[in-house]
Length: 471
Length: 126
Image 1 (cartoon, rainbow over the protein chains, first blue to last red):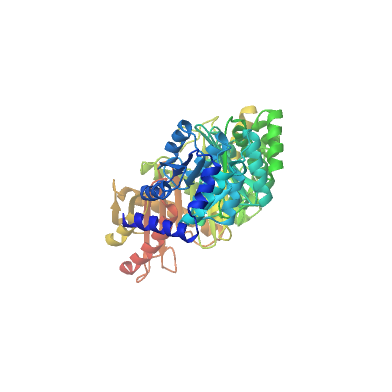
Image 2 (cartoon, each protein chain N blue to C red):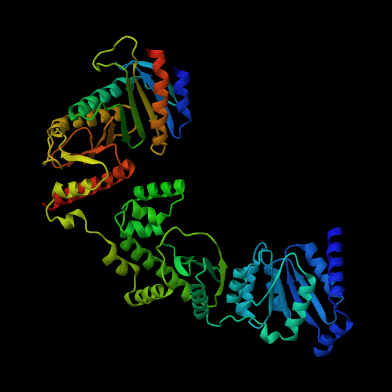
């Protein structure tokens, strides 16, 4: 209570000190011809509201209506004729940002004063994009507030917000302004229960999320690239651990090339953007952030709009993505199954030493990737290891082991068993059973090499089965 | 010895761990379920075959085996201080350890901790 009185006292002193005397006030009272102007003040701090109401109670022809949240403010706006809105930004429920956006859209002539505790020039610029022309910093300078209130009410036409009526144009205007200013932040679009978020970095679009577009990036990547969920999981873990950018890590790990990923992401965000643009009666606001985006996978607005148009013409994301992204499978590249295709892929792994495809009896099915007597001599022994490991896992009751990795001082030997037989320790006629063996030196990124090895080996086995069936 | 093996219990997904003689006889174990005693001999077999493979390949003796199965990851580690791998020399430790963790368990940490614990076991076996 003491604080309330103190605030009120300081307000009075400001008024006196700045010469707001009876003549000053009566000038406006005369000008408004006795009409009472309604000011709606919105803030979740009830003591602050009480002090404002008290302060304005002495002002002629001003009536202050208070609301402690954005939702109540909207109800008041619907019921009463309001001449000026003064709102805080941070409030529970409907925030000041959302309230301002709504008012800008539905009461475009209503002047707004935003009270902000973090009023930077950039923030003011952002609000100008939303049509808000008046700001006042917290803690309030009441003298300044009253001067602003009278100035605005004296000439409301110049102070109204300048939101566009067209939802699409409004969004595009905001994005174009953001592009010009090269800001970082987020354009938030609201339409009843739907929400859209357009993340911008240096004025370019980095990512778009629409609540009506439920396809995630994971769906997009697994459907349109040959990255499998195991690899995505590993990349997620790496990003979580190191704070690296997800897309950049996918590229760094050579799971997808930059151009293909760029094209894929553009088509994905264009689909979400097309959804947002189609919503009727949206509220749009821009919130600036200073967060750094660690990727250059960003898109000019024109590029994004071009893709949206393309989507409309072609009809589906898939039709756009597929020609640019899908890699040919080994079978497509090789009309006949050849282990050479597998070895070509494995040869690119960091620390690659040698590889071979081995029958369960321990015989090499083709020449190894690199001719090496020691490797050829050890192949049957590796098979023995796989079988012994499988006996161990079966005895332990944890299923039949499919991968064995032996680590020595200089190398790691990996063996992956693919077996169609129900009895996994036996081989029946007509059932495929092969072991893919890889030797990696202990140099380089073994984790990534092992992930890729599993992928290439699986792909090889699938092609092996398909070739067998086609044959 | 059991106290040292207990250190592995804090690994995410820990199921069981045990120390075995080079013949596959169990020295100590810590388990959340059934005993590892029977698995010792089978794990030894995997180790011996793996070491034979690495010897043939000439890449240094394999001392860590990681087996991936649908319901578990099995890590088998060998510590052999003997200069002649085929013999057990007095004053030199030779021990095998087995660690079983769930498929979702922390395999990387499992490998690191196993490395540490087996070195701590060695003085008792010299």
